[in-house]
Amino acid sequence: MPQAGPPTPSPRTSALAAPSPTASVPTQGPNSPLHAELLRPRPPQTPPSEPTAGAGTAHPSEAPLGNLRPRLNSFVGREPELASLYGDLTRLRLGTLTGPGGSGKTRLAEHAAAAHPEPGWLVELARLDHAAAVPGAVLSALGLRENSLVARETPAPTAAADPTARIAEAAYSAGDLDDAERLLAEADEESDQHGGVYDVSAYARLLAAMLALQRGDAVRARTECELARVQTERITVPAQLTAGLDTVDAVLTARERGPEAALGLIGPALSTAVAARCAERVLAGMAEAAARFLADAGRPAEAVRAFAAATAWRAGQPRSAPEATVVDGLPERTRALLGPDRWAREEAAGVALTPAGLAAALTAG
Image (tube, rainbow, N blue to C red; front, side, top):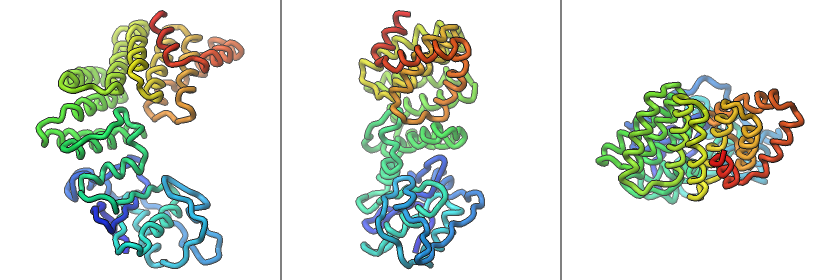
């Protein structure tokens, strides 16, 4: 029978992550704040209709959602278990199915999640042998390892705190600032329990600075950025972390001293990030910040080129909610200044720019 609650790792357990705007997962057992957040009641929802035989109801193969695997055949039976799962998923964000191997837990979880109106993710726990591995398994299922600001594997004792900080980043990226702050506080607490883990602390301080920027608190953002710099003196600094701190510094400088001063920082920072082979998603975020500075400095043609270059580097990947606010209204604003024909020419020129090319143009300009 399905049980609602935190996944307990065992060779016979599969976890069904119900739709969650913050993608939260438990990290330190049933008394952790994150566990309580996961099991916080969801707003009332209408349960999905229970499938009937031959009625042509939706199957995972018809509408694959989240990471659910498409199925070519229909699902028959298990009506009582499905009804229980449907009820759970209208109230809870996480469900766990337990039972003997081969009893159909995975198929049942997939079918229940696929019938839900929101995306669902399946987390396989059979291969895990200790509780600390659960957050990493959920991160992998959600595809957050490669998309985090500092995508890397971390050994114990940071294994618990680091996934929590990354999940805080996922909440931040979704625009859920309150959840991000709660999760970040938990990551700080877990890091302190291990005597202070400098790489996790530096990453958390960067995220705290970004949160402060979103809330318009420039003083706190500057403080958190400086604290992160102090922490980086004790570690081998990942290039993405340096790029993030440099971008926050440039944004703060724009607010303190104007866009031209910020451009004097973002150009060299982008050059450094390119030389360090940062992911194009990271480079795109820096280019979009530069585009905003250029537009604010009265240089709309250059702003269009930087924005177009960043969009091309993203290769269709969507911007996070905070990244979208950076460029909100920028195309319309620059098109009104340049006119549609000139704007289109500058856009075409920007699409052809490489990261190194844009970095050189910003540094020279």
